[in-house]
Length: 231
Image (cartoon, rainbow, N blue to C red; front, top):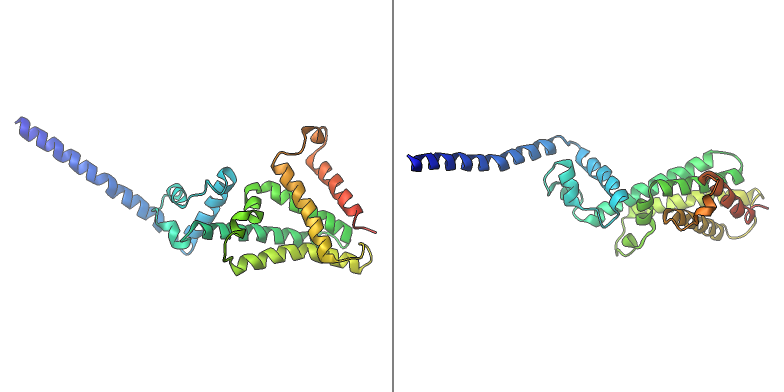
């Protein structure tokens, strides 16, 4: 009787053990089935952006993303065979946002000075909103790749040309100093980008912010930059 009882108990335990992975497979299949027509790819991108800002590039893992989304470990690799492929997409989205901010700066005013001021403000605020993505966009991780997607190169150029157009237009209208518009654009870009990097890296002394808001400090910094451009 003890033998029979033990056998039945063992049999029940064995059956229970077999049900667990089966249930897991069903849940994973249901999760996978819930993503259709590119929904999974979009979900992976959105989740990766969230993780990137929290943990940085090193903390980004396709397997962890799959676990968070409740899909199989292999599912993300169907859309992004390598981690670098996902990073390229994140950078493209970042430059797309930047290009849009430069477009909005152009449309914000008919005055080249105000356009330039708006472009600087928008650049810094976007960088502060997405600090880790900004590091990805301008860091060495992607630059070290031998092959960069044409889309990334194109959208990066578009974002830069948004600033270049403002400078070129201001010079053509006799409002900005004459000179190489490309050189001016790179100089201004470097100054504004450096300001954002220093803030993100908490390298600006606390006393600078004493009794002053970020907008006030940004306005003061941009005014100093504009003094070197406006006639």
